[in-house]
Image 1 (cartoon, rainbow over the protein chains, first blue to last red):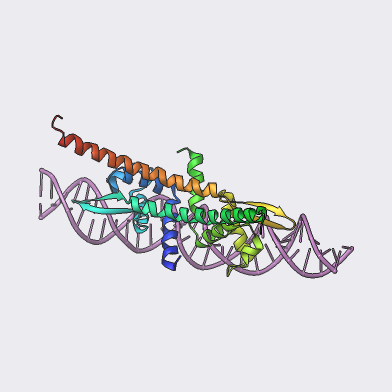
Image 2 (spheres, each protein chain N blue to C red):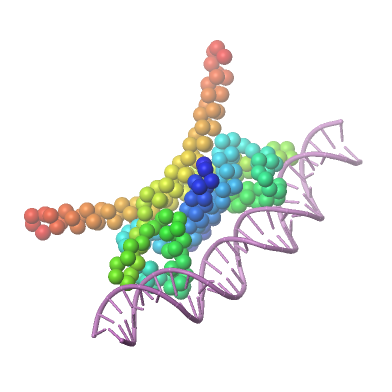
Length: 113
Length: 113
DNA sequence: TTGACATACAACCGATCGGTTGTATGTTGG
DNA sequence: CCAACATACAACCGATCGGTTGTATGTCAA
């Protein structure tokens, strides 16, 4: 819940809030792809795709390694899991509310209060 | 993977890509809050908070019910889980890659190919 | 009834977003 | 060496974002 954590959450959710970037994630989680290979899949300029890849990289959702003149991108499943864990945190808050409600009901129906 | 699904994913991730909205989600998952009560918690105008609530509502992450002159917002944990399941889908793609790699290794090391 | 409160929404503004084109820098193969 | 390829990045543009103020509407309480 620190400032840094919030910045990271901002970057992660923002990066995933675009269908082209989500599609890129699917591809790079399935296997390594060069930026050019990815760019060929979409009806937009190379530069646009390169910027999408850069957004995902800055968010930590993918990493690149150089291979000759190509940059091979691969998805980071740990980063994906870290987003999932943020949602689990949210769900845990909800569980806390349910637990409180359950306790309230239990204490109301207990013979001795 | 339909257009509608992608639109929903866009809306969900976008809604969560703002720290004020994530904070609102924490509060409304913990219990019902009126828009005014929520607005009082943040250093911004009532209208700004009301718009944040509207973004979350349109994404389906919270619902409102009228109680007198107040609108009580409550978080929808199912919507939160639906986001989590999108991430599970991504992770499954990655698992598929790992499985393919494992199979490759296994067939390489098998005595009979 | 009326005044205060709760909400919604429109109009506006600077900043960021997602796209473009153009240019610069590496890298490789012949 | 050099021509083609792969990448990066800057500058620009229209659209959307996150905020503001102002206004309209509905509801409650005295």
